[in-house]
Length: 268
Image 1: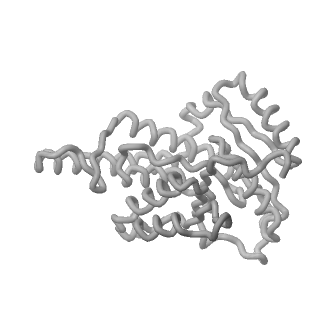
Image 2: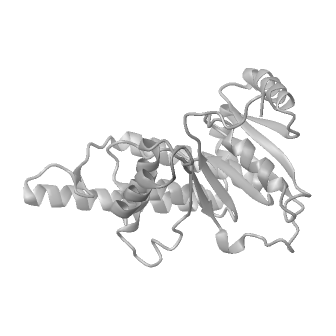
Image 3: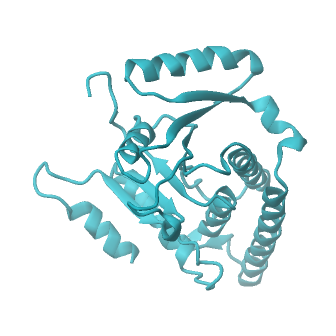
């Protein structure tokens, strides 16, 4: 499947008329069905898109996606964490053109390093949206409030603990296999250089983001969040654990990675 997808990405399009975005479904069944080949294929497709300079949108909750007769009245929430050329903003505006989402309002969540930065960041984002003639409420969350233990949702913490145990078990198996065969740590046929503290940091950051989404956007019609790129030298299995923790208990989610061009400018 990975080789086939790579071929499609390289050859699709005619002349200058080439698709610049790849949309795929999040493989929610991979653990339930014990599809052990899914993580490597999933990570391979994302990396191929990054190399080919294609934007990526991963859809979670496709079965719960409303049709044109199921009108939504909540919010469309954007968690704008990394610069993506405005792709999330564009997608939220396109959703508003659909009958099922036309009654929704857009909320943009931004992350500030310090409490003192919050008002300045809020003003900057509001001005940016005003210049683009986009109507949205801007909400700034500071990193300090993120670190408060009280902010973590119970179901997020349970998922975090489960991911920790599974990653520890997987890592122990890798080490045992490498010791038995006298080879370096290997995963997906490639050597792996692992910093266990970095793995813990990835998990904890994902826990904080999932807790924030559940706190502010549990009733949202749809949530859009930036796609974290697969970390170098981490097994694909670990990345799937990070992603599973990110999407935990979020009903409808678009995970978005832009590409190296602005899709929303003052002139569009």
